[in-house]
Length: 182
Image 1 (tube, rainbow, N blue to C red):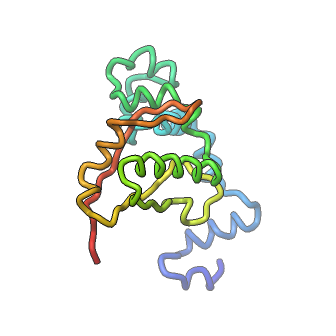
Image 2: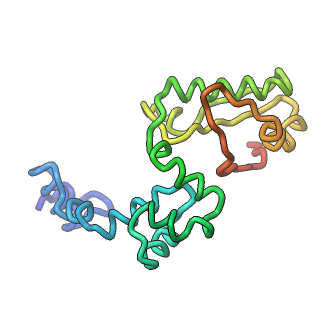
């Protein structure tokens, strides 16, 4: 056991053992066992459906469902609209979006926002802002110098969608946060 590791906050003998195992082999037995566990693999596949959380994934498993076909065959009618879209585009949602595509999507959003007012501003945040080379989604913050222009603005954007050629859109989730002042 390495005393240097155990001196770190929150690192006891178990963490030191795991670190040495990983340093020696580049792998961890516990992680390999988890990846090989059929139940965990099924739960992960369900969890990867947009709109399905831990409890729903376990519910699907407890019903005896073992793959997406079971979800479609036995549970399609009970799924929310977002979950149905998540199943339909399962493989596409697992693909990562490259930085240049994130920029193009964000530019389309800003262009659409500026149809309402040329003063809208936008910044790309999330993984893109942290420098990730690819992302699972596109996170943006849209602002306007006149705060009243942002009132119900997301609704306005969705009421009059502009869909770039070759794309398909569907509303899965929107997060609304009140303007914060510091």
